[in-house]
View 1 (cartoon, rainbow, N blue to C red):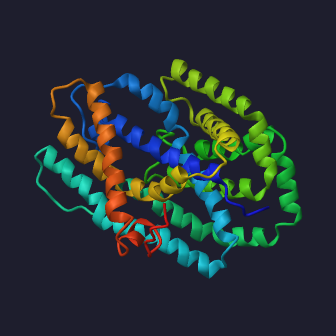
View 2: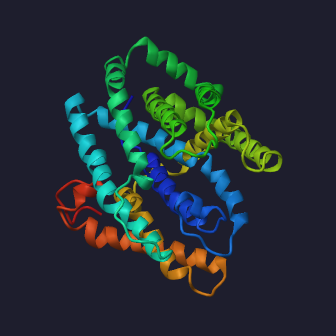
View 3: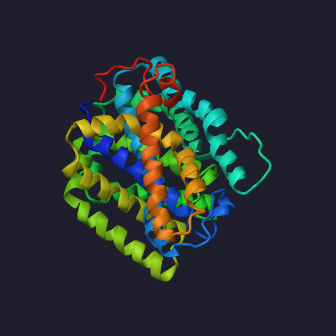
Length: 355
């Protein structure tokens, strides 16, 4: 398997993090927002959630798949010690820094907005994802290194053969269905800091690595059969919407989730596997933006929610404020100040060539 740069995976990571921002902003306009620690607008946009529920079933598993794929490329250039050192700098350091310095900020804004006593509360918050990723690296890297050493072996040939069949990628869903049946999550889409989220993420991370490891067969399959996966995802989403009011049984949501993901990989491979200056910039920005976006979102909500305008206009303004604030903080602080860069997962030296 070649270790060439896969620009479609970079693009899909950037798009997925952008969609994450939209998703989190949409929560502000749901009647249950405060139950999960979000600020809440008095007038809701409950219809918006039907669209978000389509996204929610695959957005987090997708990021775990992509993270597993990224580890494959990282391991091609490093031994075990180098890998752990690099992942510690890129994942563990921002995770710890985020717990003590980033996540408490939006909680302070929440307290200020609702006139609660101000208190410093270090917590993982939305950065739970990073903690999971680092745990998966520690757990799975020995196995992955063994597989890379045996890349010309029988297991990879069997895996490649399986992935050359359109049923091959979907067969992976058996493991996700088993997880949903065994763990029995109260909500399939409740990923953060739950056993379900940990084991589902572990599976997606593991299979993300294996899909890249299998070679071009997987990519050619999802390219050819992307409309099949997309159609299956649409059918399962419509069933979930009409029959189960967006919350179908876990085993159905597991299949729907993977169907969306494989169709996205197929469309991405066809249309996004190309370099560019925009991709170069945003692939660097995506990780820091993910880390800081909740602070920007809450700051925007504190300013905009009290305004006497329609909820749709508030959604548009908070979205614009969040994206713009994240990019400004990244461009003029995180990207340009050398000692700050490692705290957000970037390499230490800043170079003007980096665009």
